[in-house]
Amino acid sequence: MKVVVDMIKCQDHGQCVFAAPDVFSMDDAGHLAYVSDVDEALRDEVEEAADVCPLQAIRIEG
Amino acid sequence: MTRRVVVAGASMGGLRAAEQLRAAGWTGAVTVVGDEPHMPYNRPPLSKEVLSGKAPFESLAFTPKAAAADVEWRLGTRITAARLDERVVELADGERLSYDGLVVATGMRPRRLRCPGPLVGRHTVRTLADAQILRDALIRPGARVVVVGAGFIGCEVAATAVGLGAGQVTVVDPLPLPMAGPLGDLLGAALLRRHEERGVRFALGTGVAGFEGDRRVTGVVLDDGTVLPADVVVESVGSVANTEWLDGNGLDLSDGVLTDEHLRVGGRPEVVAVGDVARFPNARYDGLPRRVEHWSIPTDTAKHAAKVLAAHLGGTEAQSAPFAPLPTFWSDQHEFRLQSFGSPLLGKDDVRILDGDPDDDVVVGYHTGGRLVGVVALGGQSAAMRAARYRAQLLQQPALTA
Image (tube, rainbow over all chains, first blue to last red; front, side, top):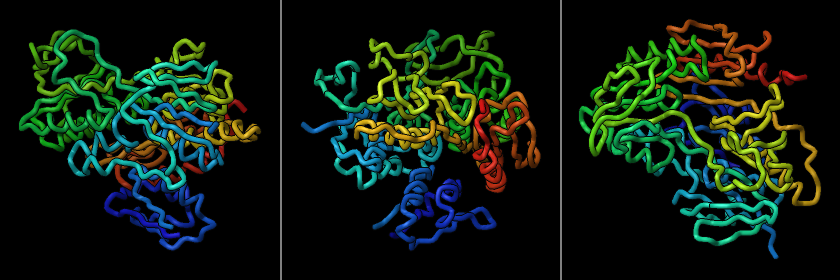
């Protein structure tokens, strides 16, 4: 599946990092970094990350 | 006949409940009933990005999960009564819906001030419509704004109004410091300083006695008779649970809907409550039922409640541990952010600075019996990241009652 983050909406809350640490991380400056091609096995945690994003900026495709 | 779950309330809690029922394997019908005309939308930006015009109203809509595509949405109507013994709810137009499972997700509405004076010019911020009307009022040049209530919404609206160039913004609250109720004095004092430095005025330690003006508000009368001139008044003085429709069923509705440790209502396994209307015991803490009006709670409650309800309707009982969420909230005011993990409210009597300085970025710990129960960061992004380091510690803790 593909993960897309609307980086205009994203405000670096980092809730997605707690939910799906294999996919989302914060860089040293506190800004979001993420992997966009994600193994299907991680679907539950990516969905959780999308749910808990305060800006609802995470979209899962496929 | 198709079995059906009725979800009462079409905001975030109702949406998440519908989605999570599907995720939990419920294949029967799901009908969501909500009084607003809109599909579920995200409310926090109503006092911030949307009010300030940085984000369009359209950007707020949630994108429902594909699994919930067949959910029936009954919008622009409300449930007016329920007969839980008969498993039936009644809509405003008299139509009756029978159900196999019921999710209570009717949320809260703003509490209003009852003191005398005109109503026109007085605003609340709960719905899209509220925010649209308030924005129109705030952008009139030179608007004098009085915000009643220095809690989350009051402080956010005051900051947004200053940012929009309002002529004068004053926050009134009976407590001596802003946000002192949820956060205590240390951060309250830091917030007061920050707001004042950015042009927000405060009238603290006083209530509102009334409003001046004939047809519309021209001033806010304080307890001591002082009048604050006002073109726009925002009332952010707490909220009232939307539970009237549940009256007459023998439920404890004294503050929202009382639930058990699995969010079930009134000893009925087919009725659950989610979101900020649910007064639930949190097994992570002292087990006392509380309502929690944080953004994380609708999703957390919906996940647990949907599993419990779907299992019951499927003929089994969920073997899950009692509900024990770690609450989290944030609040953006001016260019700084409050970020909280855990339950600062429970540790307000023992507040310690964990990191930093209240005049700059600061991380504050809240303790009960010497144990850390909540962490709040105030400042920039680095403070929030430092607070997040305590999250694992807050999650690992056994229940306070253990």
